[in-house]
Length: 302
Image (cartoon, rainbow, N blue to C red; front, side, top):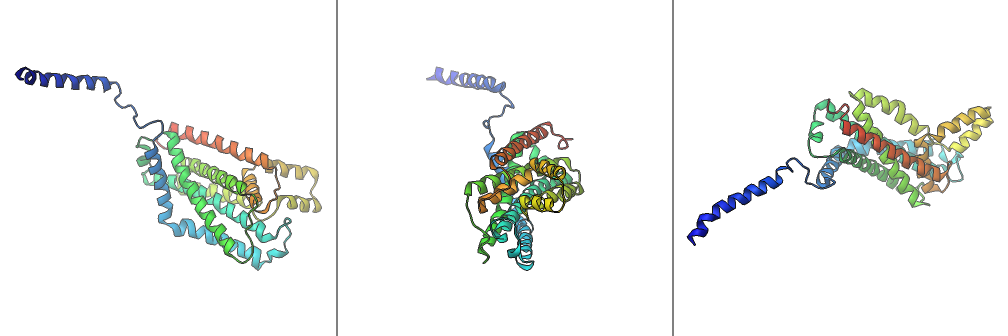
């Protein structure tokens, strides 16, 4: 018994030293798995709580604006007399306004979050935790997608409640796919804009001169097919119409609006397989660019 008591302390100390030596080479090595799920969830929840805290500005205001557009074009001006497709104008207009609000709010959420963090100097609080570039991109995008889907869902519910038979669902898969792809696409665009921008005016420039015109002029209020017919009747030549077709062929806003509306009314102006592939590839390319930007720390760590 005395011998055991005498040797117990040295044995314990040697075991501790051996354990310390065994883990010395692992100092600073990430031990939270391939994906930091806890950090990713925290960042996504932070982005969601950020826009929900001011829901009257981020959810209610754009919803009211879109409903006013709907009432003005479909009711006050006389939407029932407008010929756009085989369906009533109310059914044509409602999905277009919903996807327009979805894209604009997805962009605003990620762009405003980053530019506010950069201006206030709080972006370092996001960059310091053990989050990889991919996790940072995913966290911000999840916040933008959440806001976009909330606004779009509110609008579709309002349009469904209104006594105008504005909502009819024919292909749910198209609604889900193009709605989700559009939200991811614009969240990534907003993320890159927020990284590039140095002041709020830069974000407003992209919003006013790129995002808003493209969402408004890509088939939100009218059928592109009928537009081309009327342009041809108005004297537009084949060369001018070919230029318009070329612009639409590389316009992702046109594909998401057209595909999303197809899920409701069952008709589309563009090829659905082309639209599915185009927006999917566009999102993959933007995600890669955003990952490389965050990995390099361009305009974030300088």
